[in-house]
Length: 246
Image (cartoon, rainbow, N blue to C red; front, side):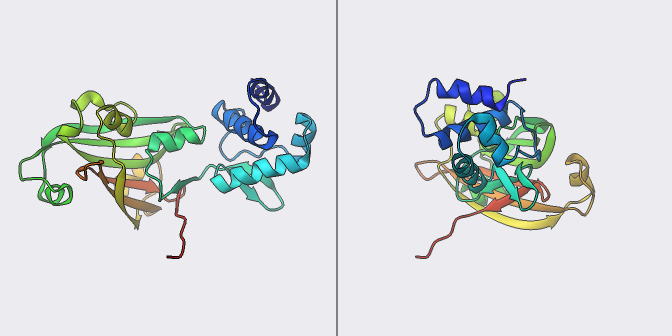
């Protein structure tokens, strides 16, 4: 298996980045190649500095940045660990697949339902569509490295996609290919307890904590094209947002 030192050496041959940024790239790549697994401890900072022939200050700066990103978590007295719990920035409009790939994890889906239909009264109100307007519905379980993370129930305005089969792994990639990727969204987050069906699909226990997120996505011309409700496992996801004073 490729080692972190090998990855670091390969990257250094084609990059003039500062060492701490190079180490950050190498750590991301090592996670992507499963050199380190979810919730696994990194070697101690002193050991990393010795193995890679760099200073501890460089190692600490690189790790501090990855901790701020949420890729690593620092546990006092224990060390630095790969963050198994995903931190989702509530202020950034990214897809599940993009979030997982950015953390070195492999996204996939299990389809529960894919269908064509017309809007329900609630969907017509949210998407600002006329009664009877055509839509596509995509219901699926989203996985990261074979771990079920969330249930996704999405309704997409039919004109935003060329066909029902256009969506493979990433819905946002399919929408972008058709020039209809949302650039703005309204999101609502609420807490819930998983019911029996949700718990079974997410390989959790009935009554476990969950997070419900409703998203209404808009394209550049102001039209709403996506209404999505997702149920996340509370033990695997944190939603964060950066706040500032007016």
